[in-house]
Length: 306
Image (tube, rainbow, N blue to C red):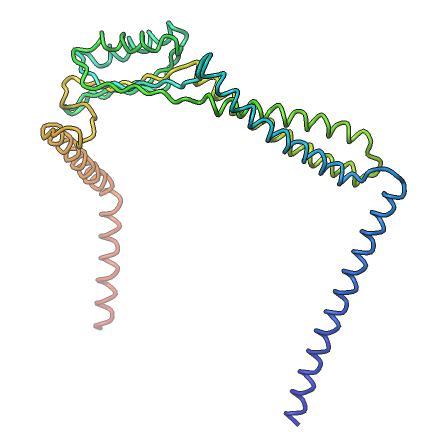
């Protein structure tokens, strides 16, 4: 009996699977038939299919992009002949007589040149006084800003300037933006011819995607424009050269390491002392509670012995 029962179960499962496969094939056939009928209807009416039209617009964008790549090469050569787009940045480590005053003067200089402060900090605690400031200044006044910082310093321990050439990227973005704007215009014309809701939605999806790409490219171009126009000057300041935050690999500075370690040790003992003070202050709460618990536990043990 048991063998027959399991045989019936297996046959039922096989039958269900066969029916499911058959229904799947039928529905796929119906879908293909509807698709072919729709395509034939559009072809018979003589109007081009919107999916084909959208594909044609995309293909045109790709071809324009390929053509734009060739233009980029010419544009790059032209940019070489005219001017390059370079993002400038400078980094200095200086020793000064007064850190707070020097940071203030650097900030005032940047603001007087229509620049602004990116970040600034001054720390004159625990025998390790240091400061840092980063400002943005017009790119055409980048060298003057570096000279101003040098004149403030007692000594310039290190200076590093770099320029990032973004000309080719900018030319490429311009080409892509032109192609995408042309594609957007073609899609708008195509939407005017749309008759069915499905056609409108299909064009709208492609138009939304194209506009998103346009906004991304415009945002990147704006970022590059702003960074090319405004250079960055970062300065580390200290009262002595040993206290400047130069990577240890560049110079052997035992005094700097010792002072840093001493400061960290003081901070550690500060935390310990604050913890002890907190525990003592809360003694008015935990001591009575502890005595109460001890009294109750002692009485309980005595009752058990009796």
